[in-house]
Amino acid sequence: MPPATLVEHAQQALLLSAAVVLPVVGVAAIVGVLVAAFQAASQIQDPTISHLPRMLAVIVALVVLGPWMGAQIGAFAERTFTMIAR
Image 1 (tube, rainbow, N blue to C red):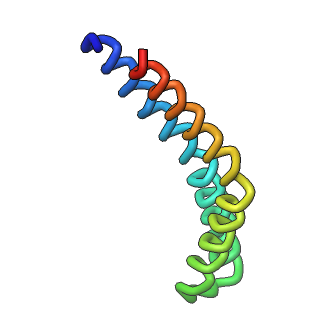
Image 2: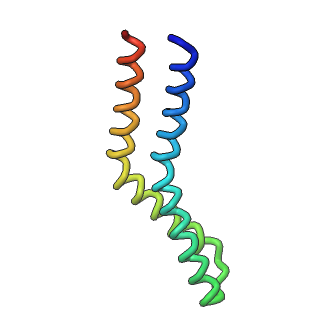
């Protein structure tokens, strides 16, 4: 396999990993901003209030987006293995 093909597959893998992770990180960031705004408005500075909603939102995002994430990674793996088998 030529080095250019390996570099192309590595680039695709990095872009895929960013595309798969970004929705979950985005959910965590949005919930973090909302919780921070709530804490600033109410002057409640309990650490549990900042971590628990973010963790629950990330869990929900992973449950909802998990099948899509798995399908994207599986399709990439199938393309890669098909390319290697040639």
